[in-house]
Image (tube, rainbow, N blue to C red; front, side, top):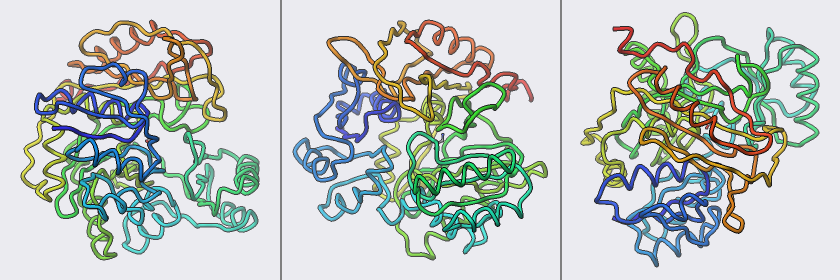
Length: 421
Ligand code: GLY
């Protein structure tokens, strides 16, 4: 089996790594890939940009790929699935219309409200004045989100005081990020719950918890995610998310006549009473959640994609490791506000249970050079969270580049499920 993946980041690399663990997968092409995927056995980078929809279709056809996977949201928004489908090319990705659930916060909020899916109280505001007035009706902190795609996780701000609300609204409306969503803050436990959906049947993946804040102790600005761990939920919490969030959303897609194929990510907050509330929908695997999910997947990944294309995910017999996994994002100074680049990386040799994925790395004359705010991600799997953390942070200590940053408290003091039995 031969598979094409569009993307250059750590998520695309992790999918390729997992796919190639099964001997039935002989080749994975990455468009355009990264330095790690340029030399890993079974992987090959091709010079096609991940956003070049026509180039990707041409490559899929010429290389006779069995199917194509897409990791960047921008490529979904550019209509890659529509284009592939119109040419009869197999692809695991939602259409442009369906992917609005991720790239338009306004669209997804209207969708949730129309179908009474539990979600924080909010308003979509067209002006700074309207946004301030609405924010004034909410207790602090107040959540402020840009409507459209904003790179690097800077599209969400949790404003702790009124001055911060005012400066954030001013900045968002000056930056012209489109309408702004102002939302009540719900305190609780956040969980990233992802399914694979074939349009008829869905398969829940292992859930994960993401650490969105930049600094230890959940301090500092929101980011795209600085670390994650899996598993997270009790069976009662699983059940609540399935019945109150996942299934109502899938029924709503059906009522709207929106066809959907691919990953669907529900960013859920479970409040103090155990009630889940849907904060956001993404049309892809979360990052860094993807590493914790794939670390724990024991079944051949390509089989799940084939069943998705056949609309037979109900026949999937997926196995998850009883081990736990932890992931860590290493960023460079200035992230998420600036994209520092150009630092040379030194990476360690790895043990079997720890992996490194390149988020924003390029190769220059044989050297690995940072190329953005999110530089590399690490993941590990072990019997307990403390063991997984130990492996992860031991590896992190051997990573070097100027002005690198990572949180030191990912999965700290988390009980391993077997320890709670
Ligand atoms: N970690 C959250 C996301 O990928 O959007």
